[in-house]
Image (cartoon, rainbow, N blue to C red; front, top):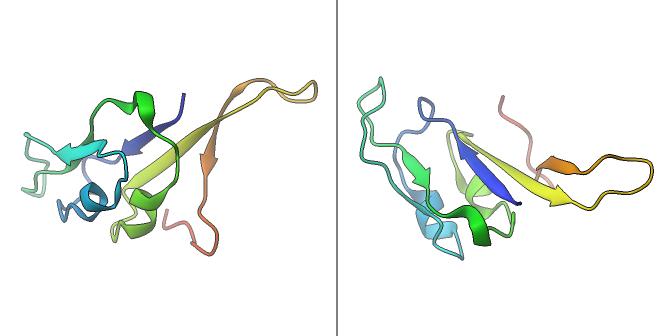
Length: 91
């Protein structure tokens, strides 16, 4: 299943990802992190397409996107991290 992970402590609550998600699968969190922000959090990820728009717009590089890949005889089934084209990893 495709999914995203948002780093609770790295997110500063700008919510650009909330606006960027075409499936509306990210919302404002209800708990403060150590820096005093309400970080974004994923909602039901069952319909995530792993488009990585949320990770692309995140200025804090707090979002990782994982896309389910089909198993081939050479590889085991599992999720792989998606790196949007032209985007460097921050961490």
